Length: 77
Image (cartoon, rainbow, N blue to C red; front, side, top):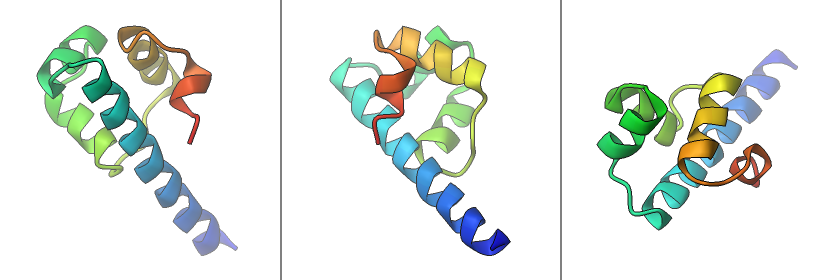
């Protein structure tokens, strides 16, 4: 079961990253601009957008605020 759960986590992080990319582009932000607003590095934002890493709830909250949306909208996968 552990491997199956891990595979599902990877799918979730990929979908979440694609959602961030979509909302970022809709807001007309570059990665650098959004990273600055959220107080994270552009390289960390890139890993989130590519679905290579999970993020913390506090970072997700800051992403939502910077993208002028809600946390639930971020997770509308």
